[in-house]
Amino acid sequence: LGMAEEYKSKGVGVNALWPQTAIATAAVKNLLGGDEAMRRCRKPEIMADAAHAIVTRPSRDCTGNFYVDEDVLCEEGVTDFSGYAVTAGMADSDLQPDFFI
Image (cartoon, rainbow, N blue to C red):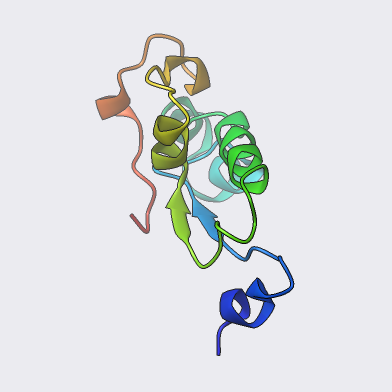
């Protein structure tokens, strides 16, 4: 029995959220490629915005999901992700895809 099912009757939503692209974090900078890797990332704000969209949904209807940040924001009507890029003007296709997507 998964946590989503276990807590559903109590109104607690249990979901996962993963980034479509690499996110500019200390781990990326220090372990995975330095400044060059950071230039090909998105800002952490994309994850915060996606998480906010998820947690403000009705928890009884929104549980047991594995979300990707872009998909969540698209569902919320976001179509332009350029403001999330660390490097202004960088095309989405030039961003580093997340390692597990």
